[in-house]
Length: 100
Image (cartoon, rainbow, N blue to C red):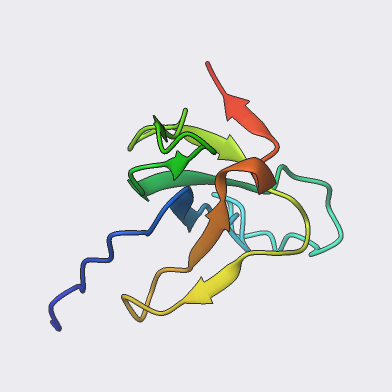
């Protein structure tokens, strides 16, 4: 197995591992791709934040391990591991945080 690369985002960027919905149910039934499911992901890495006009650091509000709601389009696709899908977003592009 190949080693997984580690990416530390710059500024207010957030690296998200997209949660891919299963294509089959537990019983083996194929699920249609048009079924409405949340476009969500898990935060893997967070940048230090952005600086304001006075030079003060504004930290990113998200932290590693948060489950977030992603926009349908956008984000930069990053290949770190062959079997997982990673996307790089700006903090303000993420729609919200999901909680249990």
